[in-house]
Length: 288
Image 1 (tube, one colour):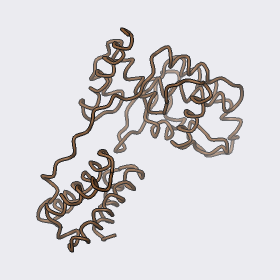
Image 2 (cartoon, helix red, strand yellow; image 1 turned 30 degrees about the vertical axis):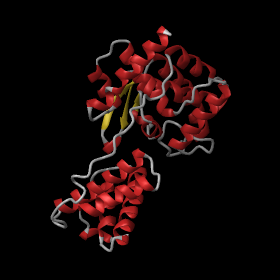
Image 3 (cartoon, helix red, strand yellow; image 1 turned 180 degrees about the horizontal axis):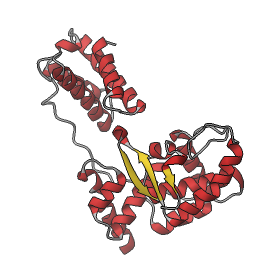
Image 4 (cartoon, helix red, strand yellow; image 1 turned 90 degrees about the vertical axis):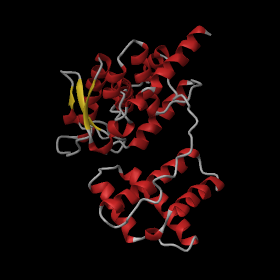
């Protein structure tokens, strides 16, 4: 990979504080772009608008999803913005290349009674039962992203005040709120956590895996999928489904969209506005 791309990826991690997963995706996209430029007989630094357009066209021909094409184009635009900013390129060849139109889809969510029933079904004594119940109540109560939940430290949680401090995209921190049920579930989980860790363990994460290490985002997703399958419910449920349900139920009960935006940690209000469409879907379902 050209050194300038490597430098850009390092910049994204050190200065922009993007997640390792996002940086890895951008690295793959820029590798594809570099290969596309090479086929055209140009180095990345010499690419023009024609190379940028051909790159997008090539991804479409190869059957990439619209979201993947747009992410790759965003990676290329960001790379050249970086080069222009630091005097390594005169212009951004991808600047005027438009993203592909996205089909607007409503996110999956559960009705309030469905969510309550699902969380209630996450029963079971012992370490796993207490942990899973606490995870579900925390996800639904806070609307956290799964990465924010897996990164949550015990020191970030104030059970008396019913609050927690999470770190979201771009290393931005925000306060989220814990319902009474979430506080109860976390309180019930903590004795199992202490017993499993012991007094000498330095582990600071709130949620642990079966080996007493920090529970990863993939681990949380596996728990949700396994519990959803065991419940026999037809609806597919992912950790992000808790976030969608949280926002949908707030909007449905009259919460101001700006408040929901702040609770979700959305930078742009347009991202939050989709939940008003979700609520219309809910009204149609109730009517039917």
